[in-house]
Image (cartoon, rainbow, N blue to C red; front, side):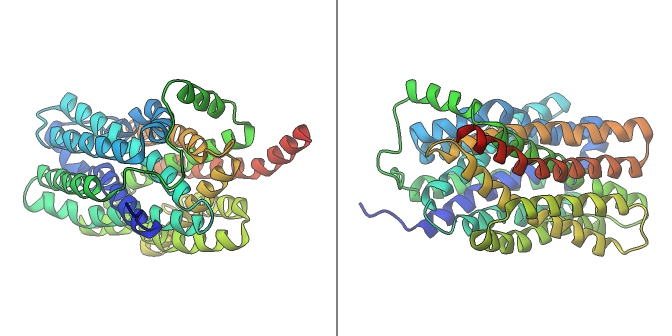
Amino acid sequence: MKQPSRWTILSLIFMLTLAFALAYQSIPPILGFIISAFELSHAQAGALMSLFALPGIFVSIPGGILANVYGAKRVGVASLATIFAGTLLVAFSNGFPMLVAGRILSGIGGMTIAIMAPQTLAQWFAKKNLGMAMGIFHGAVPIMTILTLNTFGRLAQVSSWELPVLLTSVFSLLALVVFALKYPAQTPTKGFQKEAGPEFHKELVGTLRSGWPLWVMALIWMMFNAAAIAYLTFAGDYFVSVGYSIGLPGFFTSLIMVGGFIFGLLTGLIVDRVGREIFFIAGGSALMAVTIFLIPRSSLHPWILGSLVGIADGLVPSPTFSLIAKLSPGDQPGSGLALAATLANVGVLIGPYLVGLAYDRTLSHRTVLDVIALFALMTAILALIVPILVRKQKKLVS
């Protein structure tokens, strides 16, 4: 049977990632409605974002390896089915415990997709255009985030907070059907799928012993995600607090994803041609830190500040994933990507929760933004350390 083109695979992976992103980002636009309906604290509200990532801490490395062993099709179908079940549980929740259970269940599927998707692209685009493929892939999250931030709040306002979540369930079910029918059973690399057991253990050990440069790159992805997800979760609250109506805070917050989508694609193309990944990672993270720090202190209009945060957001993901793939051991880029996804989930777990806790303790939106800016600054500092570690590792090998 003829294999589909790489670009067909990219479109299927993009659709898969849209389902993950929709489930992930369905909560921030309706967070205020959920807080009111269930009388939650801001720390509990932040936990609803964090808990989506909790399973990823435990399933990212195994999930990436299992995709090598059993194939992306089986893992992708199972992940979409889990997202569907979890979002339904959230929609029909009658209290905080059911919300938590639904978010964790959705997170099991979503975070498996988060590692399986870039790993699959690294296999299909191993020879060329990997940066561009990663840039397109990373556009899925911005697209769905922009959509949810600008529509879900209004849908909840005119109907109920459950309606957006139910729409999320429907989309995940449609994606499941299309992916199951269209994605090929075989991988592009002959003999890529391996026997379970010894190979699983071998790849797991190889991932954990992959060297300091790869570990620091994974820490970079962790801190960047802590900053970005905390910003998406709570920036809208700040804009509401300074007097903007319900539609505008969602729009201002979504600008991070507009810029992230556009500049993510451009950055991927540039990285394919010139490399210099660390320059983009450090520069983008520093720009994000400075801009978020200035939001409550500057007289610039929020759409300008939001756009700058978006530009910064677009400079980081593609070079990060490209460099992680290059630094991964052997011929298995999935192992390094799995490690990065695991630590990214730690960042998503601690970011919104700590920021929500900071607000509960201080009742200050300025403090919230300062903590987010600190996460971004730490990302930039870590990026500057990577070249030093790479040089040291090369000396040890030679």
